[in-house]
Length: 120
Image 1 (cartoon, rainbow, N blue to C red):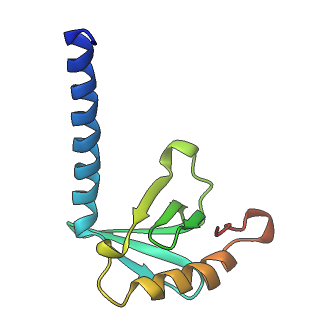
Image 2 (tube, one colour):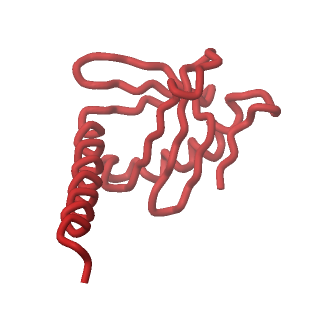
Image 3 (cartoon, helix red, strand yellow):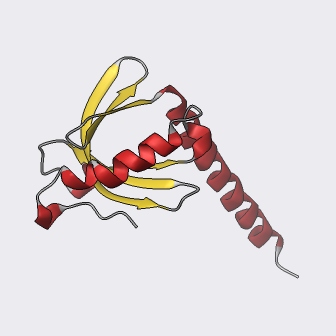
């Protein structure tokens, strides 16, 4: 049987992990994605803050999309990159399929071939 402090540490780790997940899900509530023909997108945060980004890497699981984003036209340092995981529940109904099609056909063409995004 584990020692009491080990149980407390495990419970604290589970609590912090759940808090982190809920916090980041709540931050996505005010975000609107604006997709462009050139493969870039704008993140419209609440309060009005717009950030033009490009997709550095993307993975489409079918049930979720994982995006690694960097500022458009900028060789952003590793720490300034944004990661965004989206599920159908994060997007208004009917937009999930549009996002997946845009990701496959537009976002992959936004960069030169050497820096092209890979969609799995």
